[in-house]
Image (cartoon, rainbow, N blue to C red; front, side, top):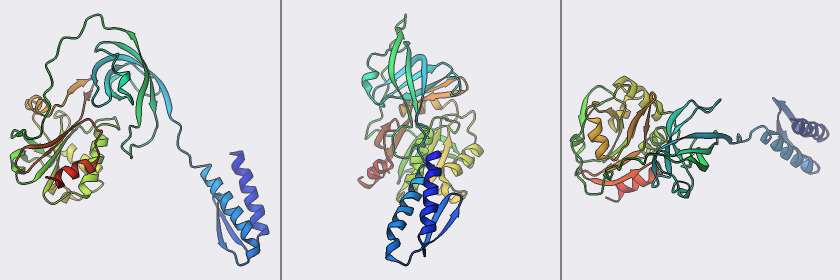
Length: 322
């Protein structure tokens, strides 16, 4: 902070000479309160610029941190620019766990196969995700060992399509009441999937923040429903507390247009299957992808979004144009 101290000294010198310029100092912040004569304008400009420089030197964006990631490939998703890796322990950052990582170029995913051991650079910007861009990602992915046994072929994942009729799935909401999808007929229903313990900012916290933004401009003919895929933990009370947290309110009127619900554990596989949601418990957490759907008043799909690369305006547009 030596540079800042020099700037502050220059500010004091200029301010003392700049009569009748009056100045105050509070916690190294300099405030210009009066200047009556034209001859002091140059000094005023200098003091104002120097103060701005002094303040800006103390408010900077944290530098991104780089970590070395090693692990094994569990799933690859070209469409969402992501790969789920069973990662090893990263000292000082994260315990060993399976989680999904974003990549900026899908070219890095093409050489990978399920079961491969890899190393990669993990970049963490240490910033909140506010502009739709990922706050962390991996790059420089290298295969250190190929899987000795090729993965068993998997059945093609069903993708929800516009016009598909949505089954009448049932849930328990944040108030402990039973709800089913048919009761929302006559309105647009916007559904996304979350679990309240999700620690990854580009996943559940991101879609919940997007729904909170949509909630501010939600048309009267639309309803929001956030569905948990963690029935063991996400009780009605947990969902209620989570709802107030992500919506930044404690007004129960919130639930008139945005509900939080959880299915029975036995119903989760068929619900996840219909909405193309991958859910896999891993070491106390849940490895998962993301699925968001706009359902029309007739109970049929208007649009379906995989991953988190959508914006609140996309869903608002789906409602407004149908």
